[in-house]
Length: 243
Image 1: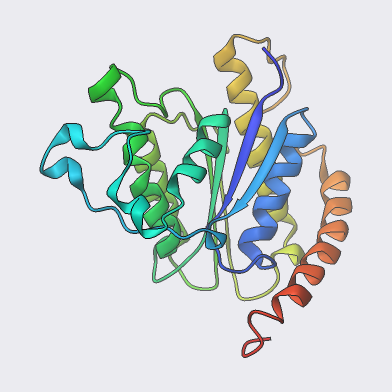
Image 2: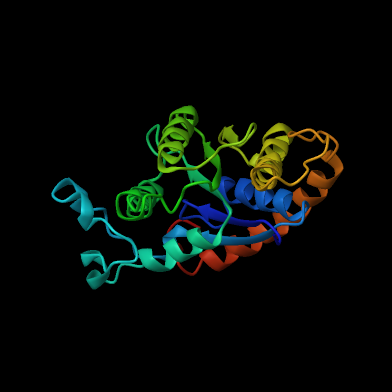
């Protein structure tokens, strides 16, 4: 059936922050199980808020029908194609006022066009895909953000595995927190294992949460420190007032 395809969706404007770091580790966990991975940064794409066309006419919400928002330079179609490519998607967000970032919220709202295909073809285009979720923030609210994502994605047709969620609640660098980095890595492990299980592939007796990868994660953390610092240097050109 080919390798498992895993898409990482970074819902943070920072390509070097804790949200990105946890998502990157999750994708490495998927890589280590032989998955093919891709990463997209939502803030690189112009996305218009959903206009809820389905509220006026349920059948007006359709993919790939030309959404009126495309005329405003909206890039949802490109993002949707990435979603359709993937077997599993890991959604990662910072905590903005006890919730996911506005950009990620908009993106998930727009996924309604894929879910609503159930009324056109009898099946959601998200039906059977696997989701993992990650939240990071210095304030309380990670549980709220994760709960909203888990409930919404499940109602769109996604399966969520055991240990498919991870969070970090703190002001400092997540890479200093061994538990959070291990949890993030295991989100990638869990989504790949569930895709394989749903395919009927023998999953073996390995645990869904791996503790035997501490050294591997520690090595990845050191690699990630350099990547994050390089991304932060690049960002000085676009966020000089902050950095």
